[in-house]
Image (cartoon, rainbow, N blue to C red; front, side, top):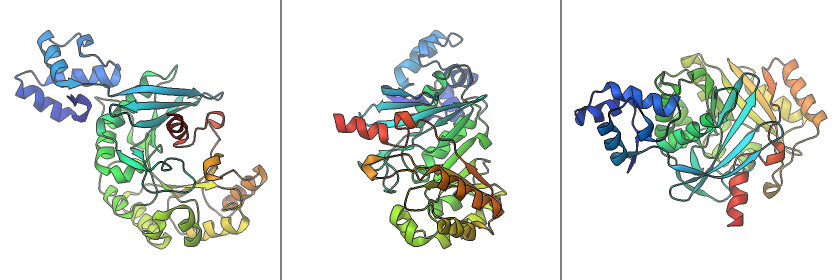
Length: 344
């Protein structure tokens, strides 16, 4: 049975027309699912009974179930979902004043084997479908309290640009006024630096945010922790970023996880300034590493983090320091899934 969330509004309208039903019902269905969070066709009271019956026979709505949930003292909530094929994915809800950010997975596992990330420790299984990605959003939306889900970041398990078509299709539905109606500028794709996909993204005419996982400012260091750098080294990546900002006039955020004993020195900060100083519309987001015992990773001392940030700021780099969230619930990508799989 097909998941109805695989259909865009226009495709759902075409489906209804083929059933000789008025196409305006498609907007009503979108409203019920995406805005009201209803996942039962029988509860869509403004649809004819015959149409509700036909929809129930042809489609389902929700294809995941909650396998585990952990809530941090800071309000961050990590959800572990089981898909219909028994694979596991994670999503995170991160509340702040007047906003809630949903962090989504785009794949089951990851093939890029970044050495600071638990997502790929058990290998790559498959891409998520459009419907499975939207399931995450729907579940997070239905489980936010007081403040609506306002922002989406594709920073969970997997490489979003390695599942390009499904992620972009899901984003268009997330952005759609008839569906979740989350503004494009409140949607972020994070990538390890897949250059052909970044070039393709330039032409999508979507004002989404692009975030690049950098984490080292020289090829030797980046090769050690991000194998993708051997295929798309820094010179190629930064050139691509120049082209992206020139064509889209959109800022790129460079994520930089500060790892004790690896990339948090003064020399590393100098390398980062040199790498980015000529890049228009760039911002660096510093992130103290989550402690991941399986990867032997820990954050540097707070004094080193502050010194690193201050050097970038004084050198003219637009820099922010991400507030640590979910430390008490292992909120780093893949950790909850990894621990669950080790127990079964």
